[in-house]
Length: 305
Image 1 (cartoon, rainbow, N blue to C red):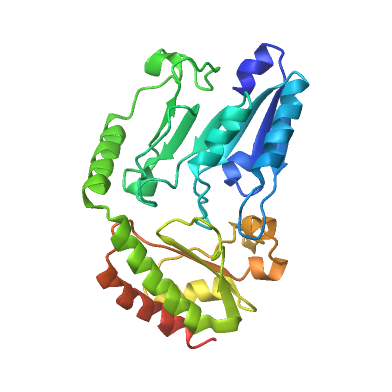
Image 2 (image 1 turned 30 degrees about the horizontal axis):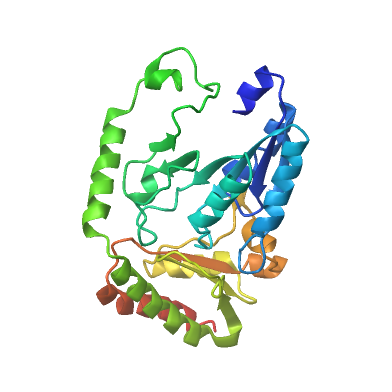
């Protein structure tokens, strides 16, 4: 879309949150090279943004004659915080903005995950997040949406993206979605997560906290911990020995452990941002599995807390 408006000699104002995925946040330099504007909106300690303030800023840009684009992250990939779709709908209703929904973390992560509103302009999904093959995904967009393809040279996919379609990857999307649709139980997953989380809170006490514990809406499969004074990379190795997969929540680049951008955007300290652990459970986890999972976590944490 930035390329399309660049060709038309029009400036677009893009609105991203400070807790959006890096693939969005890091577009700033490229978008500005096209002559567009990029604005970031902030979140509070619970990961929530001010809807009225954002709408005001969008309308200000529109009054200045700019097209506007909002990236709305439905579910945050690190914290599991859910922004209700009603917020995106309100932005759409009270502005003329194009509203794109990052729905990558949606499938099998909340109740009614398969409900989408046709009033919004677009949704994007990534297959490996719900059991399809890696390197495949899909987007829904309104039929009248126009943009300049980044991949050209062929008329595949109605001219929106050149290149032979990955039929096996696409079929894997179908199979994975059918599996989730048939087997997913929001109630079962929530009960399993709550059992693990409540025991974790009792275990860590004042030595840590669950990120966004008091956020109005959270997904059903993520627990993001900050353990004060601990080093995430060391804890990660200990969990690996127990056969427990997790994310440290910090990015590794050239062997350097960096601070967690998402946590710092929410007001956490530099040290706390490097002391985070994220557990992401299968959408099909059963309550009967929760106790065994917690025991493995407990076996690691009891030795250091």
